[in-house]
Image 1 (cartoon, rainbow, N blue to C red):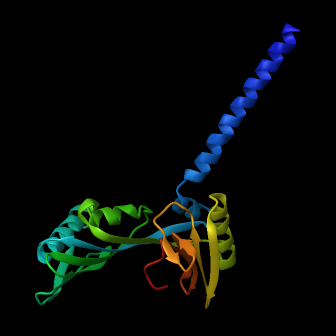
Image 2 (cartoon, one colour; image 1 turned 90 degrees about the horizontal axis):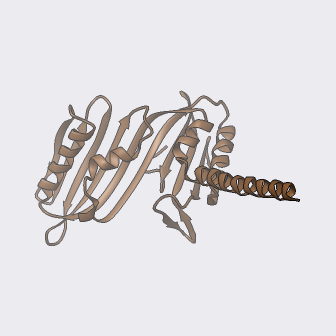
Image 3 (cartoon, one colour; image 1 turned 90 degrees about the vertical axis):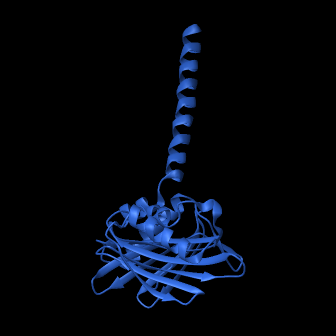
Length: 235
């Protein structure tokens, strides 16, 4: 009888351990980096990342612009060349680039001491860290109002069929229980929006959208562009 009780206790302990392990496995799957998973299952290599940011900030529009350019140079573009393209007292525009980075900054004076800033930045890279570009533009979000940030990466897939690539990405979205998945065909491209609950979302009618990807067929091969909450570039 004691022997049977020992077997029962051992079996119960194993069962509880199994539940614990499985629970952690599910959580790990849900917490995994969606960008890395999409690159993995679509057999894709990153060729470009980018960010479009807009915000309102109090201060001198030229000083704000110069500090942003200084941050970008210090973070990712030490040999960055910049050129002022407009400075009429109300608008201040700067273009910047080097061999891997290109972009522009536009600062517009508003009422009072407020300045509306728009920055578009893209980098040729094999790294999928899209957050580093945002951090290069904004070092402190606390003093930025009406902040909007759109990030993306572009990768070349080794797969030959755009529909197969699209299927692989949808499997990743389903594995993290994404909602509101909607796909439209644009010429030879497939564009999909979804709500993953992982990023800041926008409202598309009565749908929440925080994730957007497009599978594109070009002469140079098949590419996938992934953005949040939507892709901020034409494709």
